[in-house]
Image (cartoon, rainbow, N blue to C red; front, top):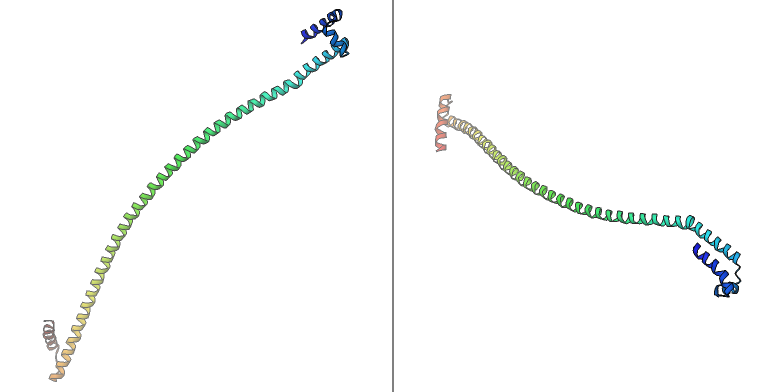
Length: 187
């Protein structure tokens, strides 16, 4: 820029002397050389100060933001990849858990079937024992009733015989009559 200023500064005196285009422009726009050079110097100072204190920090801030945006995009890609991996791992874990649950359900069904069969067999055995006990109790009851019937029958036969014969029977006679009556009834 300084070279441009120096070129214009050198061109202006030559243009006046020759009556050239630059001098004509200066006269048309009423540009005074000392004011023009001071304005150019002020412009250059302001441009340098703006570049150093305004554009530099703004540009650095923009570069910093660009870096953060790039870092954020990289993190976003990384997070998306982790999310996809996590979803894949979750799907695998769910599939594995479903398989394990199905296996446990099948084992529970098998155990329930085995337990049910075992309990059914125990119930059958218990029912058979109850039937056997009931039959034994019924037989004991029948035997008891038979014995009581025999005694009662014998007593009745003895009482009837005693009344028919009109005599008092002794123990041997009662026993003999009872045995004869029972053998006839049982036959």
